[in-house]
Amino acid sequence: MKTRAAVAFAAKTPLEIVEVDLEGPKAGEVLVEIKATGVCHTDAYTLDGLDSEGIFPSILGHEGAGVVVEVGPGVTSVKPGDHVIPLYTPECRQCKSCLSRKTNLCTAIRGTQGKGLMPDGTSRFSYKGQPIYHYMGCSTFANHTVLPEIAVAKIRDDAPFDKACYIGCGVTTGVGAVVNTAGVEPGSNVIVFGLGGIGLNVIQGAKMVGANMIIGVDINPDREDWGRKFGMTHFVNPNEVSGDLVAHLVALTDGGADYTFDCTGNTAVMRTALEACHRGWGESIIIGVAEAGKEIATRPFQLVTGRVWKGTAFGGARGRTDVPKIVDWYMDGKIQIDPMITHVMPLEDINKAFDLMHAGESIRSVVVF
Ligand code: NAD
Ligand code: AHE
Ligand code: ZN
Image 1 (tube, rainbow, N blue to C red):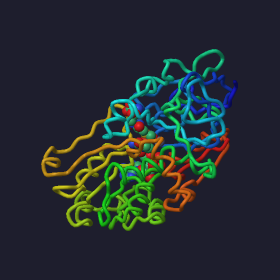
Image 2 (image 1 turned 60 degrees about the horizontal axis):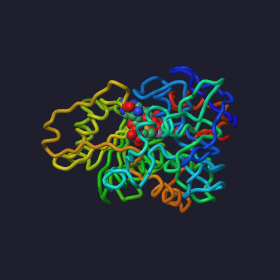
Image 3 (image 1 turned 120 degrees about the horizontal axis):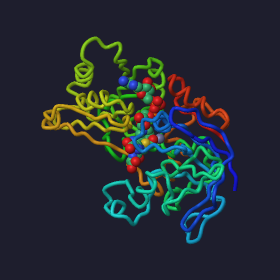
Image 4 (image 1 turned 90 degrees about the vertical axis):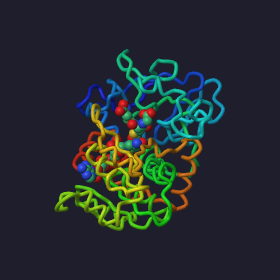
């Protein structure tokens, strides 16, 4: 079939809207009509050529929601008409990682996914006879995409696509980092670095679980109002702190935070986040994705004295199990999504979403098909 897609033909080049060819689903795969997709900073990082796994030409996008149109042989868990969210972290429930119960990082198809291919080692997309690579196993910047059955979460029919799509990455990552990865307890003091599409969801997750101080740190002063909307109690703009930022945050939290979260992808910020943790028990969670070649550093003494450095992908969520529950949280009013979606646009305008993000003017842009 033909479908409309925003294709990344090369790094550092605007996406081009073209009609691509899409092969139907093979065994164990499903064809999904994407109704809406968010644009996450990770899409920008790959388009900017900063992802060591970035491959071109490809169809980016990993924060979508849509409807199953067709299923391949052997598919049992979804059927045509089901509403689904594509999962860049699948959940096969059979691999060593899924069975361990210690991680959400299913390994069933990670090898081919990282090469921009379906599990059989081929692409379903092509343009003028040349293959176009998949991205993060999702490629939601296409009106139709093919996904392995283990990489779709079936969700309730009454959840609006243009909001539910955000649960495909940003909401689940931020709220999940608090609930699943850190396990923030009521009364904890929390510092969130970077108040964008992910950080604001960390803030609302921290508020939901009853954190005490929720300190937001951002170099964009406009983010103060945004943070306060979702439960932030204190705001720190590093550019307005005279002296050492770590010392300032440690003083503000009477010895350091119980939990800190990096939502910037900046390795210098990651160090600050670790060192702003309380001696003896503070935990710092890395959410941000750093540019290829970047490394983190700190004095080992920071860990010897009890601080813990952790990371999280997709908020530690097991997609097929947890995503439908997060959709329920949204539909029941336990978490907010609508105010964070600052811009909605047709596919033709998708490059504006990247411009708005880089200018610090959007929290989330959503493309509707
Ligand atoms: P965003 O652009 O919406 O937000 C980033 C925020 O960080 C902005 O508010 C910006 O002003 C702020 N910031 C930048 N530099 C800063 C600094 N030095 N100090 C303080 N604040 C600073 O991006 P996003 O969509 O929220 O994504 C955030 C990061 O999380 C990205 O690196 C993205 O790739 C990553 N991410 C990771 C996962 C995961 O599963 N681990 C999932 C989604 C996104
Ligand atoms: N490909 C990059 C790493 C990118 C990365 O860490 N991605 C996160 C999701 S970001 C969503 O916005 C992730 O899920 N990581 C686990 C995984 O298996 O990819 C690189 O550095 O090579
Ligand atoms: Zn993302």
